[in-house]
Length: 399
Image (cartoon, rainbow, N blue to C red; front, top):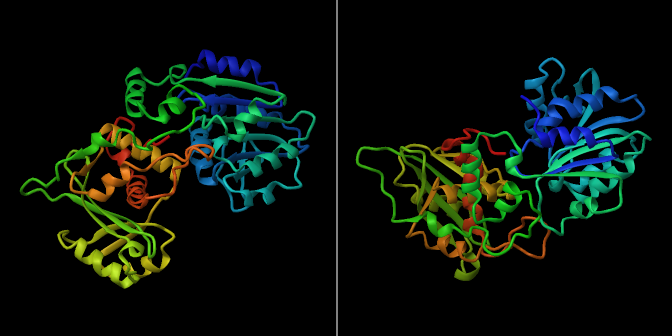
């Protein structure tokens, strides 16, 4: 694939110690690195320090960087080994996560000759600060990419500092995606903070409702057509003193998931706390209209409740993917495009829609942790079931 004007501009100017591309999703920021930047940097390393690839987690690094590189360079890029190394163009590189300050210890004391950074705005600031002191060879370079976040984000402050930085900005139209895909993405993010971040590449504060378009997904209670057996799933946010919320989902023949029932118990306000066995009994009743085994997606921190559910053969328990930022983004997209619908009789979900807001005191896309139990259960469902991948023009693609 031919390089775009923006990609050629980057290659002509990425001679600084810090070289960073920020902006829209799908705009070609990373592709030029898979194809050109990383191979050239790795091959130029002299063995005076470590070569390091860093991402939000090792898993995202594998998905976002290494797998795409293998498609271009199938015999030159290996797999991540148990010692966190991966061979790239015959050289040993370290593949490390950066999402938590506990990872500081992994890079402390080392000297880095070259570092590639993926999704930098999702990193722990403590890890980045330690990285700055490790990039200390005379010819050390850092190449990195990220989507924008809050204007108060620590990485934006770094980009505006007097360090030796080349900073290039991208909008979605700078990429090479087909025009109909670009238009679809613009439609999916329209009216949300994600439009500013992922379409126009702007640093913007998340304000107001997390799901400002939630009214568009509310429908009359859905019922399966006669003779049709929908696929069902239940998602749950567990609480003892805090509310316990469970949502029952049914998938129609076109790939849309309909919220057809909710269970909500607030032990504190009702003055009665339930045990794990009580909740499991309630879930038996809640799912009594579902034939066969029930796919049950549950908050992974609810270890005791998961153990109780697994005593009951009718539940196929799945620990939820509880990634907050990705989960909210994907849920927002599914609401915007009609991939999830909410029955008008699901009063607690609708109530929480109206009070689920961004926490403007925090950096980035962080929701206020109040009255969010049904919202968490919804997010667990969307993120875990991959509703987006079930129905849409980018089958299986979540980036």
